[in-house]
Amino acid sequence: MAQKKSDKLKRLVAVQRHMERMAESDLGITAQRIEENARSMDMVMEAIGSLDPLHRLFAQNYADRFDRLSNTDKQLHSLQQVQEMKLMRERAKGDRLEENRKEARAHEERAADDDAIYDLIDIRFGTPASSKLGE
Image (cartoon, rainbow, N blue to C red):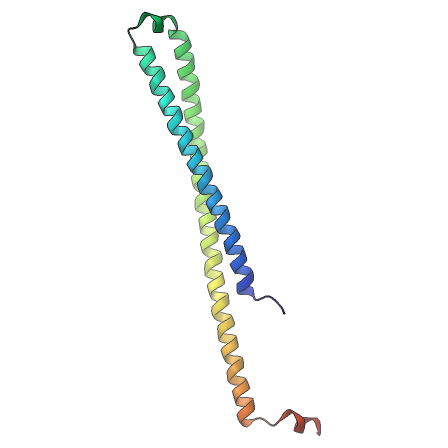
């Protein structure tokens, strides 16, 4: 039996929702990395501002480290923006597919109802199939 359009779309919706969950996961990982990077930046800033003589010896190293962390922060925020846009695209695709599936399902139900009505009309007013063979 041929597969219904709504069934095909249902499978596509499931795949698309999975893609959406993967995009959400990627975004969550990036957000976690941003938080970790921010904590590292805070710790380096505390070390730079410390009055401890040991920290003063490594001031240039701390400044270099802060510069690297700052660059990483910019990169992570850019990545986060890209991932947010991707998530919105994936969600929109899933929503569109879901709407198409619902429309296809409604169309299939209308077609089935129409066929049932035509069958009833044929039964009530039509001639039996065996009598048509004799013509």
